[in-house]
Amino acid sequence: MTRFSVVQIDMHPAPYVAATGSARSAQILARLVRERCPGNAFGIREGAAFGGPKSNGFIRDCARSLEVQRIAAEELFAEANENPDQLVKWHVYFYDAGTGKFRFTVNAYLDHDLPVRAKCEADPELVGRTVVYGDPPAMETLYLMLDAFAAKQEATA
Image (cartoon, rainbow, N blue to C red; front, side):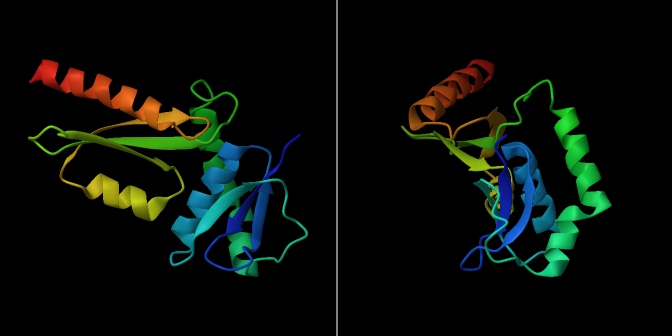
C-alpha cells in the first residue's frame, strides 16, 4: 500500500505532519490543517516521511484531531462515486476577459493550494470552474476543456 505524507512546506527541510493511505486524503488533511493553522503552508508527498524532522506538536495534533479526521472522512465518502481511487483533486478555472482574440483563459490548481484558489475565486473575470481528479491536467487537456467551455459560453450568449 502506498502511503502519502502531509508536510509543512514553508520550512526547510519540510517537517512531517501526518501520513495517510491515499493522495486525496493527504490533500484533504493538508487543506484542513492549513485552515486551522493560518500562516503555515502544507503540501503532500508520496511515501511516509516518518523518519524526517517532525513539525510542531500542535500542528501534528491538529491533523490527528477528531474534527479534522471526521471532516476528511466525510469528504472522501461524499466524492467516493466521482473519485473511487482517491486521486488528487484539481480545480480548473475559466476566465472571460470580454473581448479580444484570447478572450477566454484557463488555469488549474491543487485543492489544498488555498491562497491561490482564493485569488482565482475572487477574480471578477471568473466565469466557470470544474474539478479534475488524477494527474495534473496537461496543457493540451486544459486547452480542450477551454475550447469546449468557450463554445458553450458563446452558444448561450
